[in-house]
Amino acid sequence: MTQKKTNAVLHADVIAAIKAPLLAWYPTVARVLPWREVVTPYRVWISEIMLQQTRVAAVIPYFERFMAALPDIAALARVDDDALMKLWQGLGYYSRARNLKKAAQVIAQEYGGAMPLAFDELLKLPGIGRYTAGAISSIAGHHAAPAVDGNVLRVVTRLVEYDGDVLRDATKRAVEDALRPIYEESAVSAALNQALMELGATVCVPNGAPHCDACPLKNICRAQKNQTIEQFPHKAAKKARRIEQMTVLHIFDETTKRLALRQRPKQGLLAGLYELPHLPGHATAAAVRRALADAGLPVAHVKKATPARHIFSHVEWDMIAYDITLAPSDADAVCESGAFLWATESELRTTYSIPAAFQYFLA
Image (cartoon, rainbow, N blue to C red; front, side):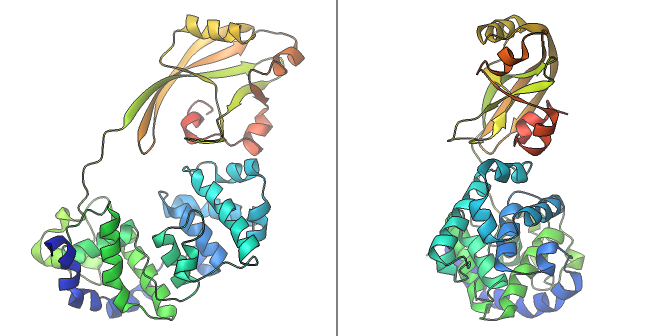
């Protein structure tokens, strides 16, 4: 048996010792958050999906707007796709929103509209992995289910000096297995999971030095004792991102006061969302004019705009851009040409979901 597989088991005494101090500490420091003030399976689910890759402060207004528009599973199951994407605009990782709707439809069809709370049943739903299933099952259902996210991994790997790669599923399962004995079928499990999340988010922080003096576990943390905190958590180096160059076209029709958009393919990155038209590579102004002429658009002015970069998990877009004004023309001919979709300022605000990668050019 390797050391990486035994660390968490060898220090089961340390894991067992965290329960009492965490349960005493959490009520005194817990942040007031809308999904904690009113706890339902639906609200826990939506908040946990939104909180993936997004800061708590940024999520709150999105969560409240989402709840106002889609207050329950039935509303989510029947929402129009474009309306859902508009509600999600700015949170990124749009597949999360699509999976929410798919899961809501499964719940409506197979569970009578009531969200299951058993861990194994939750895992059957689209977009719900082990962490989210553990969070919903424990917080909303009071089941004995650990919820191991990045915050919890950071806390536990430092606590027991566990050197497994936290990007690997095997490490997450090992930490989950190590925590499971301290959970029980009661509200204690909800408090434990939220305490561990809170500790990782506010004390044993992801960026910068942890606030060890404020930590309720400082006296039992092996990394604190051995001054090895900076060594944990361990992450293997990621592959370099692929860089893609593109030329973004901000095309405004003065006659109709509309902006050209295009809908992305139904599959792949940013599937089904609306984007500014663009060309591959870094095109010259002359090449842009030729492309628009081929599309039947009468160009009046082409002016280079401020470039931008946008980083996704595995790819980086290196974007140059042009502000393009169309010449006065037959408005119907332009809007019905079929080359693009033409949106008013009001529609940009309320109807079309445009991902952050293109928001740089809409400011």
